[in-house]
Length: 256
Image 1 (cartoon, helix red, strand yellow):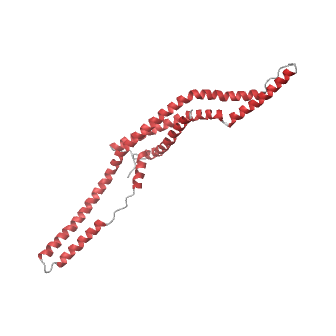
Image 2 (cartoon, one colour):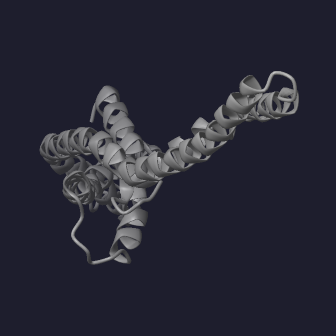
Image 3 (tube, helix red, strand yellow):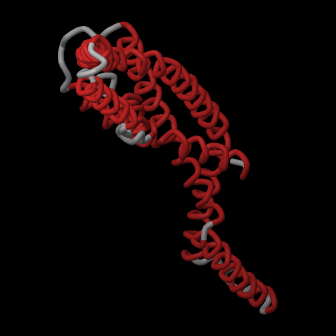
């Protein structure tokens, strides 16, 4: 595997692993939800989340062969392989010296054979080399499979995000209903106060001599309405909205 390929696959895993973990948490949350059919946008989001969940799990499965082959390739350059090569060089040097001595003595008797330690070391290094050769043929296939799985996951993630926004607006609809109801109630209360103000002013204007009390009362009520309008509302905190979107991203049953 090339360094660039390893880095690319590593980035894919790092970017998408969190999504898989989030979806795993979301599955249990959605599973405990109501059995009532979801409204259209939430239902579309639920399908997109499930598609992404499947894609993430398949990507994780495709990562396993890549990791295994990476470990095999790393073994060819690890300290163990280096130590084996050094041991083979030392044992071969010893064996060659034994053969040279045997030749110098007139090649009498049996030619010295390689030691059992040398044969075992060469066999171990050969096993590593064979695994590396096999891994070199399998790595492109594993990388291609993983890259395809990662691309499917990215596409599913985009589809999930596209489905998120209509679902967020749909979730807001009942809250907007609450707002409309609350505003209607406030307007009803304010209308009752303005009815009183109008009546007080009519009385005050009909009787300029004794109507100052009625006009003063109207003024006090009107000032109180203005003061109420100027009262600061609840602080706006975008973090609360982000928290809701994060929950909705993995659980179509999330509430605002």
